[in-house]
Length: 418
Image (cartoon, rainbow, N blue to C red; front, side, top):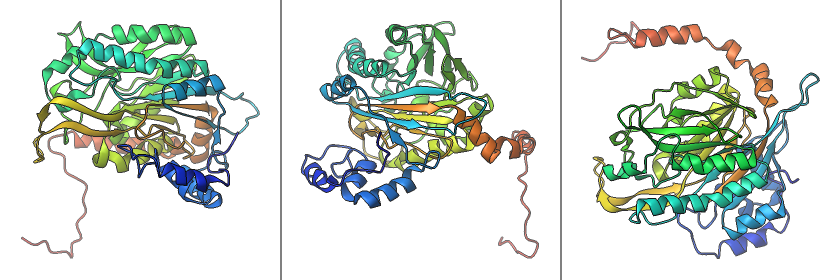
């Protein structure tokens, strides 16, 4: 097993070969990720130090890579998806055995143009994703999470209602497809879909369905926070969820799902932690300049602040729609949302994190996690013990009142201008 940041000496020659390849949309000057750019550009010793600063240390050591079976790597080569695997350790404890869980994240682009028949688009995506799910299952993944609205294009920028046809019940086509795979591989699968609630006026929700390792439906969670910025016109289709902050106790640990825009809300992250989550997934669809600087920061901060693991998933590619649209932001009409830059990764409660998957290819990220690390970091930092929830709750209760007055103390010697 090779620690991240420790690379062979002939890396410079590999760099020369890489930069001569055609530039892919979404790449960083031809490289699939920032980590791979640095790996190709720096000496091994300098790259190791930079990796330490960017990715942190797990139990005082660089994160370990996991060598997967050749059959799995051959599948990734055949289907051209990025495949990476790492191990998060915890300190050995005298009274508890290690609680090792193998977790996977899948990112993917759509499979057909958005003007193809909807049923064909959905079927093609399922066929595209299945080899990656099979690779995860063959690799012994216990819990797998797919990206936001994985079974369709992310068409919510268009404001066209016809895309609602992709919505399905919790026990619909996509769930049934994954139930068979969950049972086959003894694997919990988190499936974020566009849900149609048949029991409540066929209302549409942005929902994550949690499928148990026996193929059963454990439950669902609906997206708590809906964006209204730029082309994120999602409230045209669905509103804020009504399921609270559920944590699902599975055969492999306690998991939760903070869907996409919820990652910008620290209290949303905190609520899943208060309910006992050990792994929180953040299935997303995020693009370009608007959100890219936030992507490597927010989930990692949440993992640290709440003493749990976070799996961040983003879709890949540029999805072009038949009709141009605008979003009231002064920009000319356009036919695409922008480039979904992938970059899925894991973050740990000790501030370590994996490198990211490709910015332009489908990908499967696998990580072994010792869930004992969650409690070890709670004991170390005491964030729950030192938090002042009574102060926060008092402020929030006051803030919700119409006559709320901010607690601002003005310097009496300062004369305000009229």
